[in-house]
Amino acid sequence: MKVQTQRAFNFNAGPSALPISVLEKAQAELIDFRGTGMSVMELSHRSSTYEEVHNQAINSLKLLLSIPDQYEVLFLQGGASLQFSMIPMNFLQQGKKAGYVMTGSWSEKALSEAKLFGDVFQAASTKEEGSYRSIPKVGDLKFNSDDAYLHLTSNNTIYGTQWTDFPDTGDVPLIADMSSDILSKPIDVNKFALIYAGAQKNLGPSGVTVVIIRKDLLEQANTNIPTMLKYSTHAKNNSLYNTPPTFGIYMLGEVLNWAREIGGLTAIAEQNETKAKLIYDAIDTSNGFYHGHAEPDSRSLMNLTFNLKSKELEKSFLELAKQEGFVGINGHRSIGGCRVSAYNAVPIDACKAFSEFMVEFQKKN
Image 1 (cartoon, rainbow, N blue to C red):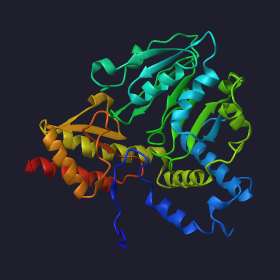
Image 2: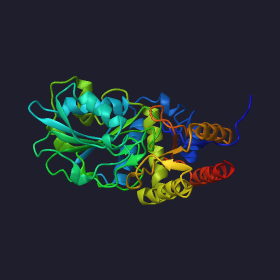
Image 3: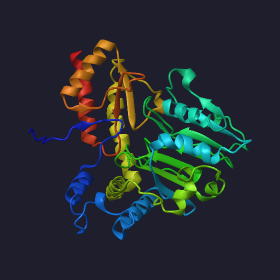
Image 4: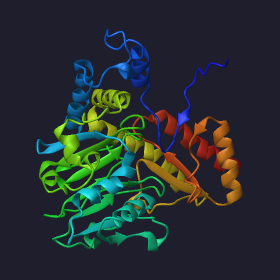
């Protein structure tokens, strides 16, 4: 059996890279967690040992994101895709409308699900401008003061666009899918009534969904829905109403500890800007050999998307990159091209190596 001695340059869009120190700690604790003689996966979710893990993860997230006391932090299952349904089920009241800002495939899916439960509309869309190449200007959003909520997707993994500024919606609850850029930079949680995120990009392994929800929004929720689909059920029970994904929450807590140890969100944001610049510089100085999908003022720091001059060159580029150990750089099947997902745990050295590969490939072709 071949033993892998070198870590891959992992640019997968999700599940994505995890910090090596977190993986090593999980490996060391896998069989005997804190002297229990059991793995954390074997602990009862009602035990005091697991409850400590659970609560530490919640508190770490509150500290990192500076989450005010008027918010609940929930650990749910079903991914962001279940949130597409839970949100309108809970908050799209009869006689109200909900606005959706269209910036990519995930906002399209969120809108499609919401249509099953009530009256929704597009508050803005950049699709007509050329396959979602940009983020709408905050001033161009159209919504009404009595809307149930306004929904947006903060980062678009497929198209490589990202919001840099968020709207002030006044009394209209602002809801954001932050699955692919949560924890990548400081944010003002106070702007949002609800933030949700699948863990598998920046927070941990797949299987956990984080929801940050303002308590006054909870009080307005529809009660005539199934128990497991009520946010209040999980808030009242500290996300322990049923068996949670215990190992995923343990891993999430360790990723949060790692984030705090390396300097928190300010340090992480600086690293992400450095990583993205390495790739974007290779694109921008290539004289058109590489061309980015996103407009420069809408570029994502998480998912860097680009094409080459021809499909033949693209195929050759992707094949050679794979041979060189770069994993996960094929663009999404819906738009093709190339995509570098430089999430928090992707080291700067990996982006530097890929940038150098891009420059060398251009020289040879």
